Image (tube, rainbow over all chains, first blue to last red; front, top):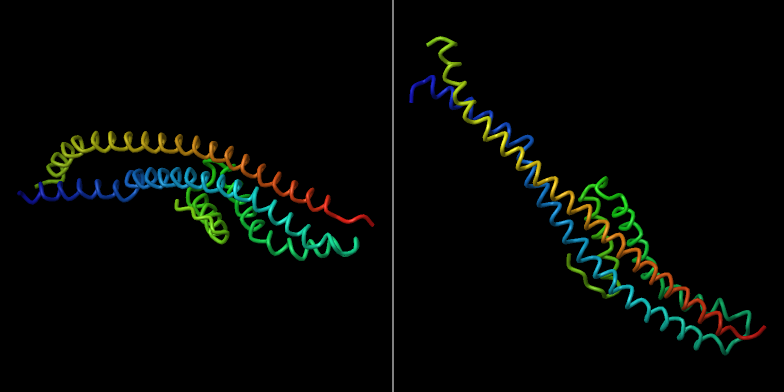
Length: 138
Length: 75
């Protein structure tokens, strides 16, 4: 190859490299991240729905046990007794609900929020549900 | 060789490469637009599903509180 042709080839290669490094190389990563986020939210929807179904029975169970435990006492002692039983049982449920509210806010922001933010909020929900024994693998 | 000769070698190369770059950028932009559109749809569907689940959770809590209130002994 002649020296000048080599120079020209190097310049063209530099232009291609600059293009790859800057704008266009970003494209596939955006698509991959977006596709992963879609898979995450769809899987998490199913996990949250499973949590809601489980919670329906769990809340009923907690309430029934609290009533059975506390109804034999005097009226003024009833609510403190119930709260002492119910509060620790509800704490992990409320933590999961808080995480779901944060996740919901990320979803509500739509495409204005980054996929990384949605993924982070989703991960917090996954962790909170895992603490309740509900396994979600996005 | 003169600068003119160098340029005369570079220009045909750029002429050949630029349309390829332009096409790749267009393809990439279209892929990103499609992906973001799919994301918007998925987020909207997920939002609706989460709202339904949150409503179920609130109802479960309200029912539980009602059960607890009903169990309270008379004063």
